[in-house]
Length: 258
Image (cartoon, rainbow, N blue to C red; front, side, top):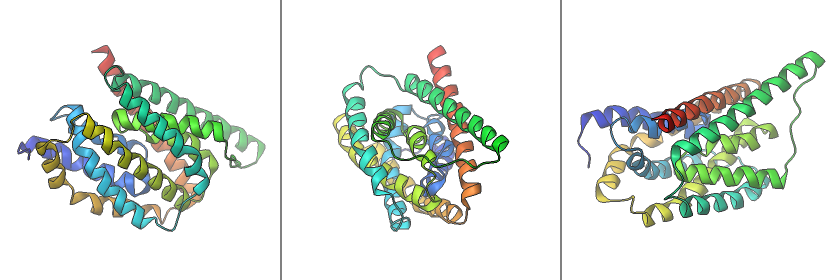
């Protein structure tokens, strides 16, 4: 197990933020885990340590949101995610995480911009934003990107949100569905991570030491989301996507320029 106090000073807040996100917040907090831990260790090792903790959070979230989900969303997006994980595994030696962060951040920023333009148009016309229906091709596309970016850098949230947020599901349904989607992705990612040799004794024992924080933070996030009304939940989620987009663009640009 790692014994560096500086590592735990970065890792403990990282796990708490990711746990709140897993409880239902999503967005930027989920993206802070690996970068915060990478202040003390390499990003690759940070991702490997965090994945078993994500699995613990997924188990808690699945139990917490067990009564809320949308099967249609999962049926459309999960097959795409499997394709994305496979592509990420096959291209692990060539594709860099900073490049992916920059691209995903730019797409997420465009998504928030489009949302704001639509909200302004609806306000001028005195109407409300109408929910979008499901679209298999679009859902497969964003599901593939979510699986790919999740494998490369645990950054699958923005692609998922680009498809799911316009559906305007009940907040509990949206959260329960996203929990199931990423629980499936994280479980599948265990296989290629093992194959790539990311789970050694040091990483696994460090994950075990941090794991008790996971259920506490996850349940705290779920407690807050359960009490949020849709007219508060959705603007908040789009704001979180905006923060995630800016964070991804910053991280990608800094590493590529360096």
